[in-house]
Length: 261
Image 1 (tube, one colour):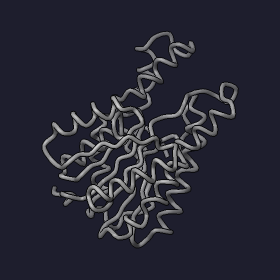
Image 2 (tube, rainbow, N blue to C red):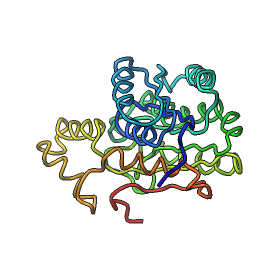
Image 3 (cartoon, rainbow, N blue to C red):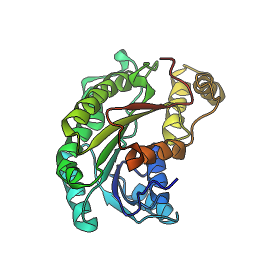
């Protein structure tokens, strides 16, 4: 299926690792002009080399800390100056620290809010005029199945990401009919983030070893495996494209069947 994304300009926030990189890979394969960002220069270089090795669209890499409003503004303006506009945003953020209420302090909460919520607010504010000008502007937000069914030990994600869904729903109405806004809800995928959570579970004593911790994640997924980042990326590519032209305000699970509701 041709998604007609060739030469469309897409920014993938935090697109140098994990699910963000998976989204960037899928979009490049569809011929899109993809700009990825990270605050880590080495990750940018590595991701750029990897994405340039894929046959498809053009790739750009821009250093940007998405918890800084001014840097997001510069990312948007530099992209417009370089490629002529912005058609789509994929809002990936990476994860926030695990832990329960007793393990988190005020700084953890404020940092999680800036990373998960305010980065999206600032991106929408900086990019919406360009997205409105596009013939098919869209925003796709990568969140988590925790917005529907909380995950034990991920209190920050459980709480703040639910607010992100409220923003997605509000933005979908406020930016319609010019810009579509959707969210995808991944479960456990084969990314550095899942390894981080497994390591944390072993270090905290929640699980005796990595094998047991991994099994706990997989046992909760009816398809009995972790997802591959490009499996999420392919769904994001569809949502980004005009093939999903009547889809906005949707929260689509890509979870191997984890959600029960």
